[in-house]
Amino acid sequence: MRRLGLQTRIMLYVAIGLAGMFFAVYWLAARTIDTATQAAFEERLAIAETVAGALSSEFDHAIRDAVEETESLGLHMSVSEAHAVARVTYEHLSQTDNFSFFEITGVTISSLSGVSAYEGPEDTTDRIAATFPEVVTVASGGSSGFRVFWDDASPAGKFATLSMPLVAPDDGVRWGLVEVDTVAVSTSEPFVPFGRFPLNSDSGDPHLDLPKVAEYSLEVISPTGRTILSAGSDAVVGESSAHFAALTEVFGQSPAGVMVHRDTGEGLPDHVMAAMPVPRSDLTLVLLQDKDVALVLSDDFRNRLILYGSIGVAMALLVAWFTSRHVVRSAEKLTVAAQRMAAGDLQSPIDINAQDEIGELSKSIESMRRQLSVAATEREKSRRELEARVVERTRQLREALRQAISGQEGERQRLARNLHDEVAQGLIILTRGIDSARRHAADQDDKAVAELERMEELARSTLDTVRRFSRNLRPSVLDDLGLLPALRWIGAETNERTGVEVAVNEGEGVPDLDPDTALALFRITQEALHNIERHAEASSIDITLDGEDGHATLTVKDDGRGFETSRRREELERDGHLGILGMTERAELVGGRLVITSRPGRGTIVEATVPSEVASGSNAG
Image (cartoon, rainbow, N blue to C red):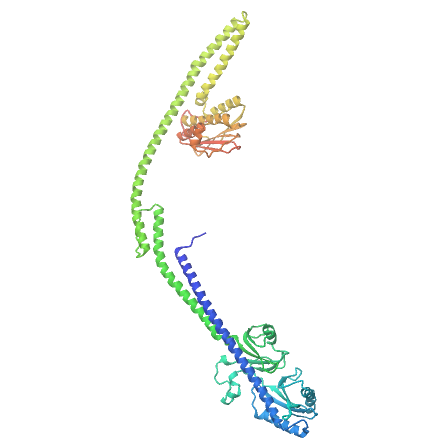
């Protein structure tokens, strides 16, 4: 994983700190925004309550004016008296009084005695017939006080019927009923609450120059969900309201509330909806305003907070970047200087002009560089002297080793020649003398003959042993015929003595080898075969002499027990594996190298690679 740079980490820490601070501020601001939003909701709910109260007051005003006009009537009123009072009441309510939400479309006065009078555009017979059941109910005490009712089957535009019992002033007995029919005053213009009330009706234009935030949409909805009044809304009077489902789902049993009504697939924009029941009726007044208008202050504050907060964070990050860049630049120079020192460059000075902790650190590192440079110079001088001494000592040791091996080989050659020329010759003469003595004693003493035969066999066996020792000390075939015949001879001798199958192979390109190199390869082979015979318990051995690029490679491979090659030189010497060390030294003395590959149970491969030097009288083949 790639490590983050210093400036990246500084910027990351700054960003985390700024983000935490921004979110803390935003959280606090969000609480303020929520409070402002709740205040806006409560304000709309208060307006809805005020408007609902105003509508209820207009209902009360209309019905009570109608009751006041009937004070001269009683249970035994005549038809003409009823018609006259109904006409006066209708004219007063429809022409004199000014109602904001509805217009008067009819007045009905009925008594329990069956006398009824209606004034309005509806058919008199039908209206009286529809009213009489209400008269009986009211007179029998089934209904009391002012009430509002409606008929869902009535034509679109009819608002509500206001009903109130008529009571005799002397005894308080109900004798009749007065009903006032109304029709809603719906409009497509926005609803401005404080511009439609009668108290402001004399100011001319009801909308004045009020801001858009003062404009609303208004609906009055029946308990069955029909819209019976609409102002500034797309709702169609007489049809089901798109807000009725939200009223029943969100508010439930609560008669009032405010919420954000979101688009439900009916094409309505998100808006704030405040619902309030109209007092003394089953109607619900719904005050609507676009969410972007109702919550403009909260949304604007939130947007400004995000904008200014983002700009502030960006500017803080920019300042932090420039500030940290100044610090990091010096740190980067110091890092490069430290890397140069780590790579061994102690000569390049460290020059960082900084008036802070990094400047002090650079001075300390520069002082350390000077000290290390002096120490490195002294150490290099000592190292070169030591290397020269080691090289000279190694040369001396190699020369001494070469001389020792050369002396050893000379001594072996001398001993081999003495064994061949003196001991072997003496044994031959002894064998012939014993053979002659055995023939002369053949007719005299059988026991003496048998003893002479045994001595002759012992002499011959001793002669073979002396000859084998002589060949092992310095095989004449190596000097007479070359390396490869010597390898074949030692392979055959090993096979004859141990029974292990030995194969000797010659590769292509085997170069001519000088006598010392040929002798070194022969001794390596001899030692490898000796180790195999003593330790490997092998069943077959492959000896290969190959050449490439002026080098000769000798490979001795067996299928024996193998061993662990990772052991150190001291362990090999302690366990008596001096032959491996001797093979390595012989290869190195002629400028070559020895590689031994082995694993327990997988056999062993001894591979010696030496350079060749063409010398007369030497022949690898």
